[in-house]
Length: 116
Length: 116
Image (cartoon, rainbow over all chains, first blue to last red; front, side):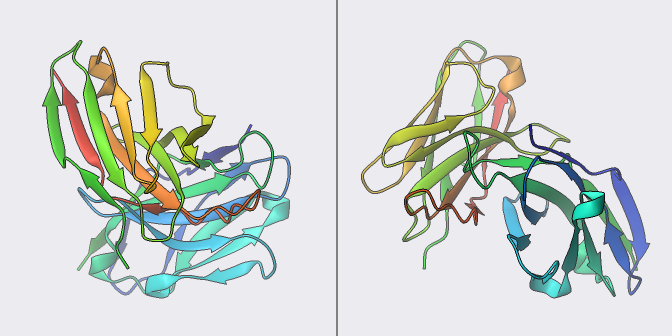
């Protein structure tokens, strides 16, 4: 069964510092991978996705993520964090086929706090 | 292009009551998925509707049911509400063509349900 682990519940960084949020997934075949961001009281906004091809994917708001099959990871990075990046970040995996086609499995999220 | 909308924004119900949540999908999308997000958790897949039929269901009891209408909007119904049903309910729409499912799910702002 698919599952996602986000090992860090809460991360605090200073504005301008670099950021890496970790995500590990469990899935038997090539997964579809996503990062979403959720601001307080809001729904989820898609930051970026990986389906196939280049393992380094670029997203919105200056974020990027790298798919590493050997480590079953899809970590999110940003070179310089802005105060407006403070939010909760969710990693998700989807099945490419089979009975669970069409559903996303989410991690429990990483809360990002940005200090001025 | 109209995004995903949900109504109501907030709802307070008493244990044992029934509730209906509504979702309008993004223009051009034909598939709607519903997720439950408990406090401090990632979203959990409830079910998905495609061509007005349930197309995949997560680990939720039958008292969670849904509908999809010809205009692709959707309803989530929950009967016999329990305290643990208190959560943010998220609707996501996507475009599915046959067995191809690109998984770009776009989320609405959610409905916050409180059961007392």
